[in-house]
Image (tube, rainbow, N blue to C red; front, side, top):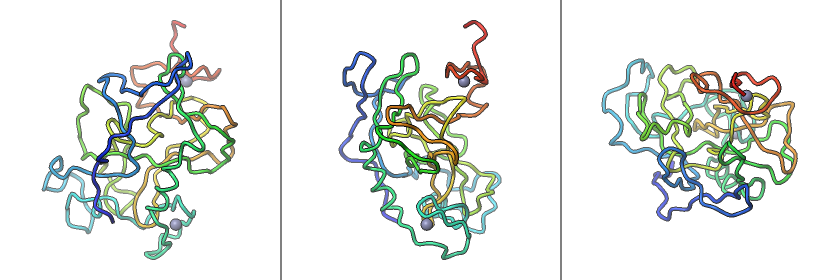
Length: 247
Ligand SMILES: [Zn+2]
Ligand SMILES: [Zn+2]
């Protein structure tokens, strides 16, 4: 695995505002500028040298990407293999990420009135298509977010077992891929999935088996009930699960 490092030349995300202007995307609470990053990396100094509670992997605890994310379990998001054999497939994570880096051919970022920035398809995206990897910095269990900026991360099991009870988060607050902008809908056409590419665990957004998005349509996922504790949803779907009773 290539040695990870944060991008040297920060490259922000640009979106089209409601009034048609091109703007640089900012985080909602901290007003900081997220940068484009097509891989997962970690900062070893943020990790304890002692294993976290619940760590039962045969691998000795070592806070490095190899120990935390190497796996042969789960479906390969590049080829669809799910045999869970040690040498099940040889799909290349680099090739998978190189394809992701071309995201602007298929998607664009646009402001959605009252919802911030969203991801829109430029052409039809069919069922079961892997839209893109959720990338960023891998944080240890119990990480606290600056400014309470909790809207830009996903949980990921750590260690080789897909049934691991120890979770870290892939945090795209400051560095990440365009999928960090995918909004919630109670009628979402895509899912957030945990799988692998070759022998590396990967979180990604994937179209549902029976749904497609048309050119010009917004791509959405379901953030799940935990995200909506104490919050209302304004997705507009007639069977919205978390509606604001005052609207
Ligand atoms: Zn594969
Ligand atoms: Zn809703």
